Length: 405
Length: 119
Image (tube, rainbow over all chains, first blue to last red; front, side, top):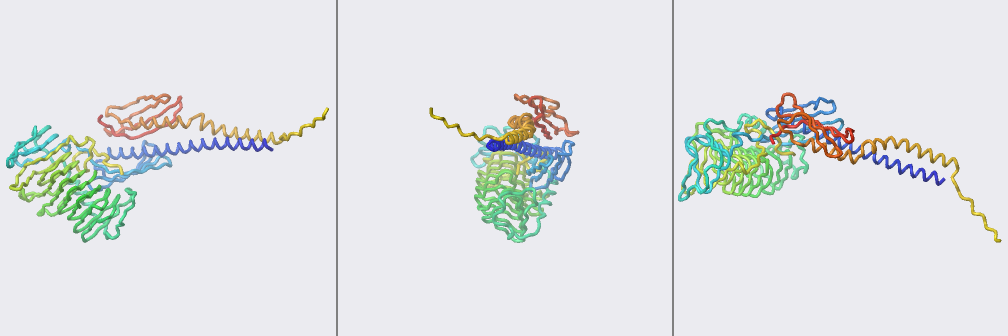
């Protein structure tokens, strides 16, 4: 009887061990297949970024010519970037990834400064620094005087100087306007439906949560993480205690309160005011595009604010005087990591670590107003990484991942 | 002389019990050896795990624009063969496949489309 019991015990232990090792192998195989499915998402994304020209569309197919590997890519504009959702399969294993895709600046779009040729030279005063390739008017760059101050730097341009006259703007306006049209299509719904706290796990592959209001919107102590689109026909005021991660705000007038921090894309048609000491994390966007050609748009970025991404004042006013053109003002100690694009006048008192493309510069002091002057400003492309990814509408064919979601 | 008492009769297994026990162990051994040979002897989980980690490193390597063809990478006791082919007419896309061997046995394969990078 004991022998029988002992033999059964031994058999059970042996069988258990074998089952344990077998199940371990099964789990390893499952994980391996999951990794292969993950590989397929990367393959599908790489294939999409190489073969698709505008980074927008929907594709389904097989990978490597095998029936076990398949993919589904969906890409649509999400503000200034393209939101790409990739779902891939390997056998039964399935993997999904989302990312924001932008364009990698090259050639002209990789320059530190692009200044339209208005037949006036660029004049630098105080501790100005221009570092990187600069596209300048034929009249060039000179040292200027404001009061008793003159240029205090070591060299006017630390980099190559090229003429801007025959160089086209490094921004695709047609593509941008198409994207704007898509962006403005927001389903009607009341903001009252917005929960105070959104889901902590953003679901980028699902349709966006869209809210529309005919009245002004005050965002106060609310949290929006993920695919949120909020539109007002009047104004949106964002309090510092609001949390936005990845959302889009659309309104004629947008104002962001002092001390706000987040990752948000702001699209205004009239005025966009960023109060001091705001931090907009990458990839954020401050965009002003006025549909009314007689009413130039205005962007003001307060002192000590940091913007990581794009500042765009796209309104172009042909036939108007210089003083009527779209205006972008970047206050003292403002820092933009990315690019500033303004088809009108730009007043720069802080620093742009990246690129600045503008029609003219503008400088207002206590006593006077100066055209094409820079005072204590710094523009340096060298301080921005070479791997920086800009918005979709920069003139370059190289699309790449700006952020994994 | 004192008469020693005979020891008590020991309890023992019957022949039937012993035969049944041996047959149970034999059946388990035969069935188990099949799984054992698959799970342990052919592909040790530890070796498979290490080998697959090596494949991951190889497939994650960036591809230079001029890099096309076959190259071999070794990390004892594993050997990985990486095959880089152009993808149709796309100038900046490559189909990369990696096969990893341990003692001449294939322990894993991975394929990926990779964009070439200027290093």
